[in-house]
Image: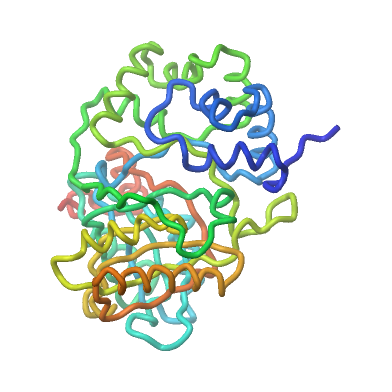
Length: 380
């Protein structure tokens, strides 16, 4: 009997409700933890995740990082002539390993910033300049302008599409979202030696090998890749977590494109903008970030190009009116608790691709050489 690959299958749904964004930090035995929380036998967890990964229902399985603490990063909005927009998208996706989430966005009407159609996330390793990197991309894509918006605080960062399908507008945590600082963390050579294999995507064959070993040896292959013992690998990974640079272990769904099971996990990707009074950004971000519909929430400065918005967040859904109902509930809550919003907007996502941004200094140097760029000119 074929193994189910649909996200709507009851067993898969139980697994994904945990594996998408419930495994915060570093886990010695991440899939065993999925089994414990989902109440699905470990052997079945392995079987289903491998099947969904091979079918493309799951796009990737990996340990994520709090890369805001590991590399200089920003959300970048690009103003690109319409006739060059798709080519610029392709360049960011195919030729810039430091651009991560790449989206073409639009607004329902002409608003401040609506001419900025291409949006990307960018990370550059410590010591290099984001502005100079963007200037290089601008030359190569024909972009007319770009706006760098670094995160000053992070209030929500998780996906959980399966878990969020049934969330009602207005659903929120009892407690405020915790603001995560974006202070840079210096890493040693040993830290990088472990971090690079730690963050790499898992193949189905790797997961099959892990399934044959005791759960506590899940990371054995990655320890070998790092050239250290399993005990040393775990020790360094736990140290990285204690220093705030580890995100979560996660299975990422193919959530915009139709998957192999014929499903479209989500259809609408909405970037919400709010402008709140200066000095109340953390207060507002903690309130917005507590709403369960929010997959991301940040304090970023949009500047005059975006009518001085300073709170940005992302929500997904399969129905546009329901996504707007989620936003309306947040708007009403902010008004009720006395946080004035002078301006708000929604940028809707269209064409999109996602890849983990490269953050290795060695990889950055190699990219510069491959593209005929003098590395010294890219220093901050």
